[in-house]
Length: 294
Image (cartoon, rainbow, N blue to C red; front, side):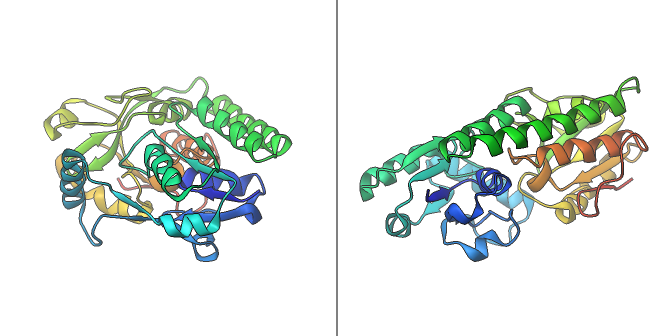
């Protein structure tokens, strides 16, 4: 089967199922399996200018949304030439990835009859269901079942490790200029890690919050997890929190890999957050995943 992944999380799922050799197209953001975008044609690129700081990115995104402009560019000619059997996409967030509506329109234009699977989870359980769905469509049902069982076992191990410990209140910032509190499955990640999320919307979209509200939340820890960015950028953006909340512990995490991407590595994110919230309860994660900034 020829699989075109137009979503980084889907690329990660395909790789975890052992189907990397069936991937025939990816996006500019696909970085797992490592180096995959260097080995496969990239058919989705960003329409955002390079080199913007968080405030400027927010301004451009708001303008694009208000004017109905695309934030991603699909190379229709390349996709037509590749002629995939299965296309993996999403409708969860038009800011995060190319929406499936744009894919359907493109397929109609180029005359492609590929099967399209939209991956739109709102909870960890639905992320695991998405793995099952990809496995079923790609003919890897047994591999998907094994992977889901392994991920479930690791989540159970974290739950056992943090059971009985005080649940530290945590505010997760998905952006810092302006500040956004995370939604979708992120509050659940905090709970599974032994924390109590504050200000988050379970299963909903991330929402803006004022710095005065952040200060008034009286949380025990702030987790800086900027959407689409790695640990280095998270540590850098954590500076905004250090200045405004001088007495609150601050944790930075590689959000792009372990928090906002609806793939198998969300479980790595739960393990990393459990280590940050409850030192000693679980093994320390490998370098590059999470850091205690203060």
